[in-house]
Length: 138
Image (cartoon, rainbow, N blue to C red; front, side, top):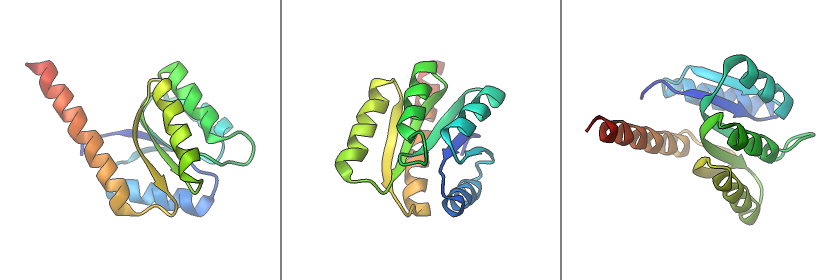
């Protein structure tokens, strides 16, 4: 896999750690972690734009939807994976919001996340990026 810069927004410390380890297992090591939208904002200010955001929707305080809006407005992410235990209609509304903000939605995954489901989305993203790069080179 090409090197990706990923931001994880997840307020559950165990799930945040597990997701970070899954990304490392896929050889993705440029990972920013945030347990709140405010800490995600700080990381983005310090480290700049990212390739992919993995966002939990339900957070203590500001919801993950707010970060999705900001990522789209600022064009600071290319794609997003929505991660939530919410009902499917809620997750689909979040995906629609992300698309309206100009973000590519790789998928909507329910908790608990499995390495296989994450791997499929990452592979899909990598194939699309490789195809786009090859098309530009022609």
